[in-house]
Image: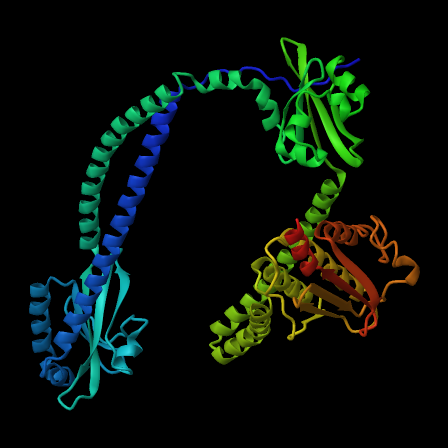
Length: 546
């Protein structure tokens, strides 16, 4: 017989001492934090210096523009040479890069650095100064030199705008200041690095002493049997020795077997699992994978894996889980797949809308942009306001919002009764089970409406008075009377095609877990009406009696 690879608890090779690992982690963590702080500080410093320079540029331009004779000299062409000399002297004293003055049409009349005049000033915000009378700053490049320009309107003696003045400053000094402070910051980071190295050595040595000088590999060898339990997550786990006597268990095993720990440890594994499967793993050293067995009257899917030392089987680890839970996970994965397809479709739809908006903006049809956005968001605002009013639980509210978006994608009229109320859900009601029930019923209703010639409509009403009551109606073809009793069985469906017959089965299992009930009647919309009742009053009375 060909022997398959088994679970073998072996000693892992030692790669790095604990002392070295702790020192490395602490030092790296501190260095990264210090570097991030330094970068954030330098960025904030740069932004602050940039804002201050913009203010200086605006104030300088504004102060110069308010000179009482400047507007009249600009209007008098004979005084332009005198005005240019004045601006050149001011440029030298203020250490600015250039000073430009234009007329009311934005045509350059005076340039402190160039004799060329009569051309338009390349300033994208020029209308703010000439038409609105505002002062502002903007950034631009001239011969690969970054400049910050402050612009202000120029008025004549009567207060009328006759042009603008633009004063530019080089932005190099901002980088120089930031670089200087950043160098100092990195110097202090280096000092803190030395301190962190010393502190981490002390901490690492303390950790080493606390675990009696053992390395992680040595600790793992002391607990190699318990490593088998770690191999299984969210499943019942039983580990037994070579005589098939259970020596370890986990809490999930107690829950699935409905037994306490003292009733499990010390008992033969054959008390729960078929002896031939145990002998196959123990004596033949052959693992058993994904085998269905009945344990304590419940169908389980189990794995029995031998663990060995020096090729001799020292025991086995049995992991098991309810078969219905695996079916539930399968259904949930199918639902996640549907959600991902929905998100892809919505992404495509919103991309088209964004392209439309971008085109309207390019054509400067701003009113159409506002109309389009208002049309798209009006329905979303209405459903959000409704859900915020009638549903208090965030998980349930998120589910209904997602289903509403899905309905829009499918061209289905999904209406939620505005008189609904679901703000009193008890804490002991599982939100996971509740969303499973409601999500599958709504999705089932969506699919039903697509198989009917009637207008696609789904109606949901909710009530939390005494009991939790949900009613889902659809305009689909309905459910035949002969199928009502068997519709909740796995694989039974009234729909065409593959991939159906799971949702209502999951609903049935979730209702059993919540001690709820469901009924099916004919809907006023022409399809089916599912009514779910969760008896919260009975549950609270039962808790008090216990």
